[in-house]
Length: 292
Image (cartoon, rainbow, N blue to C red; front, side):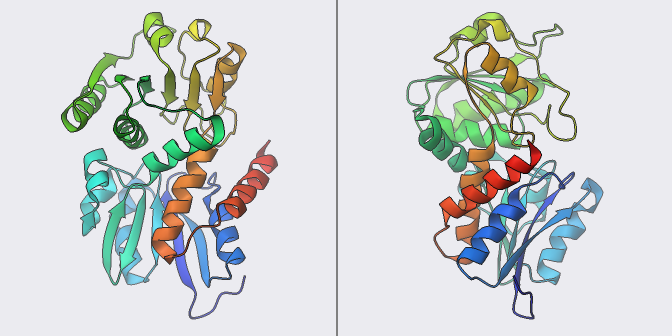
């Protein structure tokens, strides 16, 4: 990859960001299609987010991904956001259109495609348990609701965030959605809630690199073989949460598929070219194997 005066720069804003596999995935795609683009990780602490977003314009970056902890806060610094991003209340991709910064959310669509492609899970008519109520959880919830999921339970601490997400689901889709406070017990959520769910999504940062020894506890012994348990975290590829769910017999899936397909959508927004998803997937596999 040769960088010159015509190279277009993309990147990712997060804190921390050194764990991100996105640079490997996106740069592999640029190289494969022989596009004069480069993708760079930027560690942006919360207090520097406004200046970093202004830097997209000042440095004429083509666009960036947005990750934890900036997906909600970044909205106030943008010129426009898409309708789906507005409903979700979070942005994970910014496109620089001649100095106008447009916020998109590709997380939900990426999550749905990963469910379909990797484990052939169809959300229609299913009961969903969401653990967490941040930007990632909202994106997943809205996508699942629009794909026909039947019922939602949202558990979170602070409880008011769960209430807000349940309200968002009900107001925008008309579906039944219940908020639960995170219980002050070792198991966090009631056993019957876990037993009734068809899909359980762990959408908090608990267990993410460099805190791999942490785990969001639920009554894992209540899981069934036909249940699907997802963790939106992809580094490490197998969190303690997923290991315990797998040991209990559930089908498990990490966040790599969501990362792949949301990244493919972002690539297409920046370049206007179809994303080479197979190339991006191979780059992710190599990056993952280096972590294992």
